[in-house]
Image: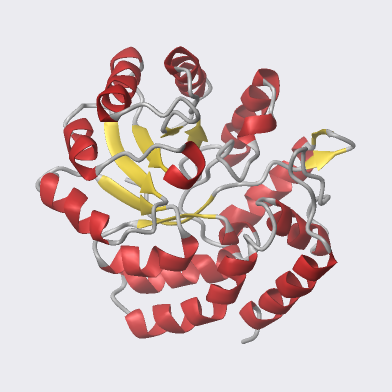
Length: 291
């Protein structure tokens, strides 16, 4: 259903406002270079600091520009279950192919609360849902046994796992055997290992900057050519890490600005990378673009 290199798209700003023209160009570039789907309004899209109106505008723009050429997985999560339902409903209304729903952050629900949250969304909206587990940001962890129970629901079709715990790929697969449950990595440095254990792709920060190389790495893995996939990943690994040398998406926007694709504007409390981080990012980008 969803596979390959999938960018967690940045949201470009110009003078503090959403830059739809730059966004359209970024999307065209992603499609041209082989990305398998698009994720607007994820963590990298600065969803936490978008207004509701902006969030809706960004999702609508992504769906319109993609125009059915690749799937759109709209970021639609919240720490409020009702708000998450409303965001998923909007994603469905405007034609998104699926919703990416993060675990509730700050509240720190237990496993029963997490399961109830996703069950409520499943019951409220008939749209494919990818649950998104990133405990480093949410302060709660969606455990494999909870994921397996959720996978039995009709609208829960997969997971974006940003834990970096590769054993969970096998845990999830063992508990959902026979079901078409999509497992996507949300952690660029471990994405190739995730793929080798049964994942189908990666929702990637690095793909914002080098969509062609990220897509080629995933395509090689799909073909079983792990020699090529490993060679490409060795080019990318420094850049994967540099993407978080300063709070994300600052590094990605810095490089996109260097490429003339958008400004490097981020929203407070995120700041652009400082001089030391920029040097590291530039070095990683030079390595990643060597043929």
